[in-house]
Structures are given as structure tokens and as C-alpha cells.
Length: 227
Length: 227
DNA sequence: GTTTAATAAATTGTAGACAATTTGTTGAAC
DNA sequence: GTTCAACAAATTGTCTACAATTTATTAAAC
Image (cartoon, rainbow over all chains, first blue to last red):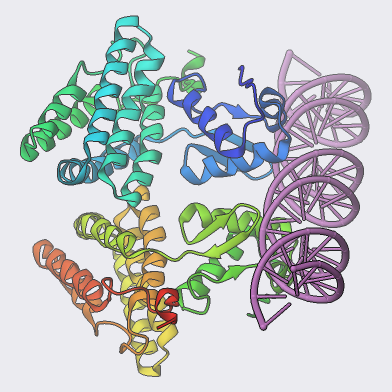
């Protein structure tokens, strides 16, 4: 994987680039992240990589095994269900707060993001679509103005992408069409009830697309390899 | 401060001991945490301390200033309000989940905790009371079974203690009496509505005790030092 | 041919030394 | 007596080398 950058990136930037790669399904769940490989890829010392990895581990995107290294997390089906339950709890509050306190600036930023998403969709750039879909919810959280909720969402969104990578059909046609723009439309109209309902439907659609009942998609079925 | 331990503590233990010290108001908000001092206090290398501090920074309990070191966070009044808003959002869900899915084991653990709290109250050990009061909510979150919510609460509770240290009257008689046991009682009866109402009242009582309108208690009033 | 043990390679974990930065102190100029 | 500059001390940030551990490879035994 190519992580080369013009300038020497700092720890936060390294973590962000890895997060983006995970969100775009370029780093699949379960893959091992070898420190030295990343160090040369980013052109930094191993110490910096270790810092970035322990940061990502705290966020839950990466799992550390003692003396065995860092791996991109593989959320279980139960964790996936808990994640969606948490999002159903939090995101209506985000919508409420955005309607109450978001500035015109924030709304413009969200509109610009919708354009980006439409753009990616027209390109058929599936990876970009997935990442932008996740970032939409992070932007909303930012606009809500509650730092604690914002932080939580900035962790849940990348994990959601991981779950989609694991439990969604590989060739699913990207994402639910333009539910995001409908939500923004309702928010702009300050129609709280409608915006919340749209958000809950949106989350339900995403979760319904998943196959949380059957084993993870890219899970190698060791038991069934014989017969 | 004495952090000496029989065995060499690992990073997680160091972070936990510091967290406890903050929760017990033994480390006040704003105080500087010098790496070398902590290293000798814990009997470990500075590298371990750095890891622990960056962990605590990610949780928000500690704030890092580049080239200036680590300080115990001083939450602003606005952050305090956001924190309580977040807790009012999350904790009813915790109560619901505990009633639905908690095992007898969990409920016993909670009962044992209530005894501990009563004990500390009888002793008049204010520091212990404050810490245990916070930990009660963490235990509830654990019993709820949702790892994401559990993690969130394990960060919000220590921060709540910090906020109390900053904005509460120093000689407030510890904490609301036995609201915790009432909540557990309602949970045991599986009276969801009542348990949620008690929880919300409890949070409201804590927040109402604070003086979020006036500057932080231990804040030096530089502007008013002249006239 | 499979299993087991021994050895080698690769990788992570830790500490210690050094560089960079900030903070505190001293002393001279005005 | 105050202000500024230069210097000294303390503290943080980073890198490199080495120790500990795990994983892979090879060879021998059955």
C-alpha cells in the first residue's frame, strides 16, 4: 500500500490515513499491520507508527495482541448490533442539536459534502462513496456542537465501514441512494420529527442490508474446507 | 503523591491509578503531570508513563500541550453541560438494557457496590464516596452489555468527577444520599419507567448542585485582581 | 508421510541517550 | 526599579540499539 506523502506526516495524520484506508476497504478487517512496513511506507520512524497504532487501538479500529502486533479489528455480529443500537440512540440527538444550533456555515459545509457524494456516485467510485457516506455522519456530529458525541461518532463511523466490509454483500450497489440529502433537506426546514425519522430509517436500511446472521463474509470457513 | 506498588505496574494499571487519583480529587484539574516525577513515583521508565498519559489524553482526562507536557483537564462550563446532556441521553438506555439483559451475577455485583458506598458514607470518607459514586455508573454500563456505551461511560464518569471538583462547592455534603440504591431497587423490580425517571432525577440533582454559571471554583480571577 | 524438536528469522517491546523546546535565572543597561 | 537579553536548567520529543517474544524453517525420529 502506498502511503507516501510530500512532507513528513505527524502521528495524527498517519492515524487518519490508515483510518481512511480502512474506511475505503483498502485495508480489510483482520489484516496485520506490521510496524516496520508502515514505517517505510510513511517514511517515518517505527516509534511514530507505534503511537498511531495505539491511538487507533484506543478508538477500536485496530486491535493489539501482546507481542503479536496490530490487526485491523474484526467486529463480531454482536458488536455490530450494539454499534447500530448506539447509533440509533445518538444520531437522533445529533439531528436535534444540529437543527437547534448549527450555523449557516455548518449547513453550507454539509451541502458541499452532498455535492461531493453525488460526484463520487456519478464517477462510480465505490471506495470514495463508502468513505464519504461515513464522513457525512461525522460532519453532522461536528455540526451538532457536542464534543463528546462528536468524538463517539468519529469512532463509530469507521467501525461501521468495517462492519459493512465484513457483513455486506461485496457487490451491493454502494449505499442507499440519496437518503443523506433528504435528511439535510428536513434539517434545513427545521422539521425535527421528520429528520429524525429519516435518520432512523437510513440506519435501519444500512443494518438491514447486512447479513449479521451468517458468518463474516471474508471469513475463511476452515471447517468446511474438507468435504 | 505516592503511587508505589509491590509489582511493576503495566501501562493500563498506571492509567487506572492516575484516573482513581483524579476521581478522588487527589489530583486537581489543571495540575501538571511531570513525566519524570511520575516515572519515579511508579518505579517505571518514562516511556511507560508517556504511554499512559497519551492513553488518558485520548480519554479526555488529561490534556497534552505540545512541548509543555500533560495537565489534568479543566473542563469548561460548556463542556460540563454537554457532558450531562450526553449522560442524560445514554444512561436511560443503559437502564433499559440492564433490566433486559443483566444477569443475576451483575445484579449481585451492583448490590455489593451499594454496600461499599454505604460503608464509605458511614466512614465519612469523602474521597472514596466521590470515586465510588462515579464507579457506580460505570458498573451499570458494564452490566448493560453494550461495549460502546460502556467505553463512553468509562470516560464520562471520571470527567464528571473533574467537573464536580471544579464547579461544586468544596464542602458540599458528598453526594445525593441513596439515589443509587433506589435506582437499583427499581431495576430489580424491572420497573423500567421508574428506573429511568430516578436516573434522570439523579443526574439532574448532580448538575443542579454545580455552579456552571460562575467561573470555576479554583480558578484564579486574574481580571479582578487589580481594583 | 507426519509429528516433534531444534534452530533461525522476523517482529514486537523497552530502555536509554541525545536533540529540541520551553521555562527560569542572572546580570547589565537604562 | 524595570526591562531586556543572554545564559542555565528543566522538561519534553525522537531516534536507535538491544532484549524478549513469536513465527517460520529445517532436520531428525517414528
